[in-house]
Amino acid sequence: MNIQMVDLKGQYQHIKEEVDSAIQQVIDATAFINGPQVKQFSDNLERYLGAKHVIPCANGTDALQIALMAMGLQPGDEVVVPCFTYVATAEVIALLHLKPVMTEVDPHTFNLTAELFEKAITPRTKAVVPVHLFGQCADMEPILEVARKHNIFVIEDTAQAIGADYTFSDGTVKKAGTMGDIGCTSFFPSKNLGCYGDGGALFTNDTDLFQKIKMIANHGQAVKYHHEVVGVNSRLDTIQAVVLDIKLKHLDSYAQTRNKAAAYYDEVFGQLDWIRVPARQTNSTHVFHQYTLKLDVPEDRDELKAHLERQRVPAMVYYPIALHLQHAFKTEAFGPGDFPISEMLCSQVISLPIHTEMTETQLNFIIDAVLSFKKQKTVA
Ligand SMILES: *Cc1c(COP(=O)(O)O)cnc(C)c1O
Image (cartoon, rainbow, N blue to C red; front, side, top):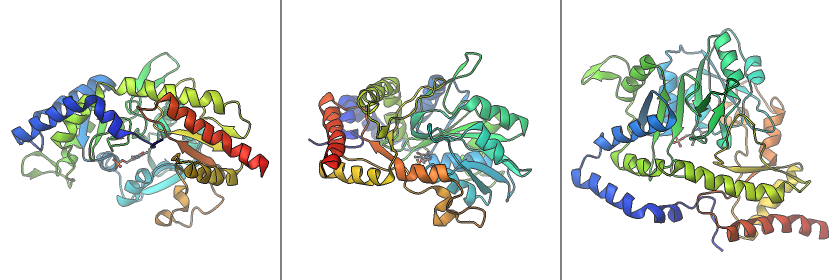
């Protein structure tokens, strides 16, 4: 059986005709940059998200960088960021000569919490980047309250959670990435809304920020050849926009399929005492970018991964090293043992295949492979 972490080829087969013809149209029109389909896609994404403005860009890392540039921060200003996340989140902070202030995450949801955020605040804290890791929103209502109280910008990293819904205590429902000042996402092929190359976008409801973001992403110009600020060149190709526009129509059903697979896994793994299934929050839906299990005994995790590989079941560790222990982010402020929860998670987590094309046969095969691990251990 050929099982993959993500089955992009299988997904493409269902939309092949529509995608092929849309791409061909772009080629025929040779409108590779800023073709009308780029605006069409960002309009459709605005509607889907309920966001006032969507600004497409070249990738998710650029989106985060541009968001920080739009905040008008000064070198040395502090930006709070969880240490259990993908490197891009912290990388752009350091790149702009801002100071990434790392924090611990919640051991169950893997996300930043308001308490952890508030503890990291100093008089120099100017922004926070909550990451909606693996597809579930960080608990945004209290995070936004703390940010408001201390006058701190909120940039949501929603690269893994596009389409997730967060419900506020007054019943208001908002999409991931539309709750803070700016939301950033990635359209990397394996993301829940992925294109056929690189892509990304920023979301905001603030018209001033929208103007700034648009200008920064376009060489710092609002009028051609009048460069008001130092910007970057970050665009979404027209070919990527047409792919995304087609896939956007399926995004909710893709999330449903992922949830079905997750529920199937949960039912079996939830019964086992040596494995912990992903925690579900009551105020956020989960779009299962990753289905991430936790094993209490770290050695079990590595052995399980090797065991699965032997049975040709792929499994990944997101993430094996917390950011505060990465050479690139080494400072005197943080060292081993400073964020024990995140460090522990790095040795406990394992993500199983989850995508839009999973069959029951595949799920059963994966589940049997996991179950046979403990049997084998007990016999040994
Ligand atoms: C994928 C990802 C990014 C970066 O996106 P790219 O398009 O690869 O630059 C940033 N943050 C998180 C949490 C991601 O998963």
